[in-house]
Picture 1 (spheres, rainbow, N blue to C red):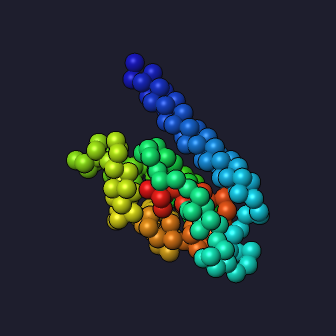
Picture 2: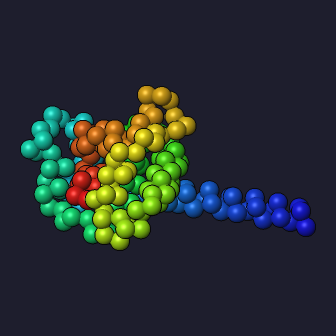
Picture 3: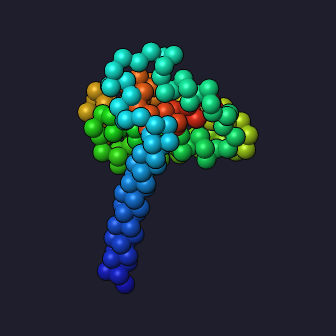
Length: 170
């Protein structure tokens, strides 16, 4: 019975790892679709000098409606983190682990239910001000979410900007 239990636990762990890999692949595909939807090559600011006035971020921010639902906010946060990881050459798994930690922290608040049901800006502020840092990476890459968001904005990658603008509109 113990061997059977261990085998099932191993299968569950392997299944969980496969789900995380599939989620990372899905997110990359969604980011590529977003890039194609906004047009232009990937790379944003790296392709040349970009002012705030001509940035993908500014245009998309102006087009976006305020965030109405918590899942929209969490999707935007996840994509921002993964975009940061991609730009820094980090494994998507560390980004997904960081996202899970931020999400858990957001739900630990006594006010979490209220935020989930309508005070999305408070939930966004909670994530923005979190002291949690990306772990399992070199110290130069271990950043808080607010620093990741700023790094992604500076890159102005059109694949990430729809998610950055969504977070900013929360």
